[in-house]
Image (cartoon, rainbow, N blue to C red; front, side, top):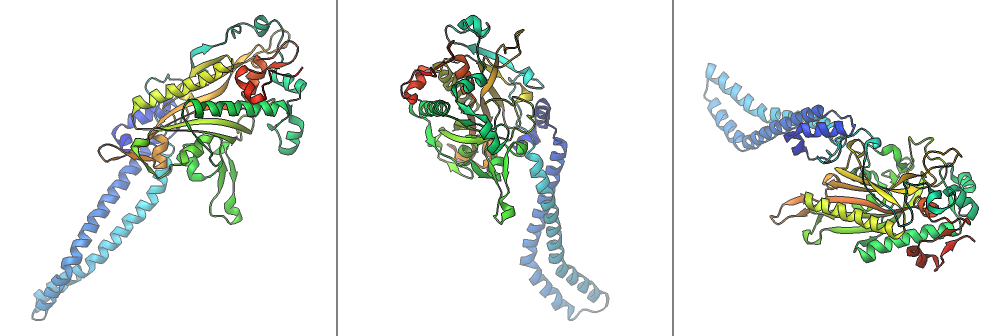
Length: 466
């Protein structure tokens, strides 16, 4: 959630931010509602102050006037009676006015609160302006010695590559048919070495983050209340992507939602808390099952392991002080952790600076990491894919957007409660990451070489197949 005070002070910044993110929200209407609510609250407080004052003086004053009334006659008596009636009716009038103000406030507040949830975080000034992912900007690339993604796979390795679909079929790593029979499209069953490789990748990534980089290992719920989804900024904009468990229809007090990332649970841990500033930054890592409906993705990457409804992900989250320089430094570090990981797996990748139109509502900045996948991309004359980058990671800088919604604060050196900053980044998501692992490390004989970094988690084996 954005800072309403900042919105009042600089509405043009938020209007430009919404426009740059292609998000339609009536900020002028938000400001009108906010101004009207503040006017009502001011008037209400004025009446309450008068009500409090009258309660102390009106009784004695009425008593005095009634004493005068005993001896008054004619016009003087009429004036005293009028004054007494006015004094007796004033508390009732004030009470009715206060109630009327309260009624209008309670009508305005839900609409204002709902609209505030739709106002996006303005992108940082150094984020490139653009309409969609097509306008993202490549920052840098990396590839291991002996494999250059700018050249065809066959030129690099001396044989025509198989796609991951071919490899998992030939090596018996995945059963799509039975999974679809159980759960429908975009589901899968990892089999044998497919499951072993999946678990090896997750454990390797989790151990690196917790053992080498000092992140606290955590388990978190993947079924959460709506306030967690709202608090982390996944609702209202991403509601159509979440699986909804309608417990209220069964008599429960609240509905639940399946999370699409461990970030939701990690951030929800400290909602409504004031953290000890000395414990910041908090660095958390989790491995969790994630669920995404992939609404609007009909026809996109329907085959294989790229776009699926259920997967497992190691996620990293940092909660730090409200300092832009510190947030930016952590953003760079978190990206660096992932680059080191991918380099250890010998996977070619590139970093993409996301443009404003690809940031989403909650991010001030976001950098995607895409791995090279020989089985993607356009087809050559022989009908074989020429290879392309595919997104595998996303690193977000959110400042206080989530923490403001979650009411997550710390007490600064002046004793003031300040909203924390938060950041998150995928460490590894599987089975999508299996696509480049299988395709990049495939051999001419149809086997797949297991990257040395994963071999301790694969029983010391060097290859799959053969």
